[in-house]
Length: 160
Image (cartoon, rainbow, N blue to C red; front, side, top):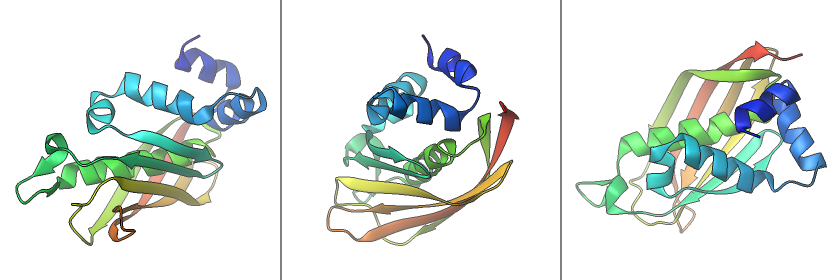
């Protein structure tokens, strides 16, 4: 059964994650598989889904020349993409609907991302019926905070 078929059967992202956990599924592996199938960028960067829980998500990813820019650091577009995805997945876990879009994402680039592997975390700060606010951050291998984000997601396609 495809991801979209499972989502339709569950009625919402929130229900999908709850049902998967109840059935004993490896949610992190399923998210990894779905994201890799849906996004060439996700695959190219080399993200590894480390954690998906209620309102939280975590990825790890290495440094590579494919995501780098002059100066030996991760390109800012990849930083934005990472934070949009990590926060978006955290929002999915509490989303009472069947889709969502990023309304706004603000990122502070605090340090160049040079020392991988990196750890990206996303956390829902507040979720209502149709809007959620989440924060995300990326740390380098030494735990240095390199980027911090705050974003808003509009949750659509109510299943309940």
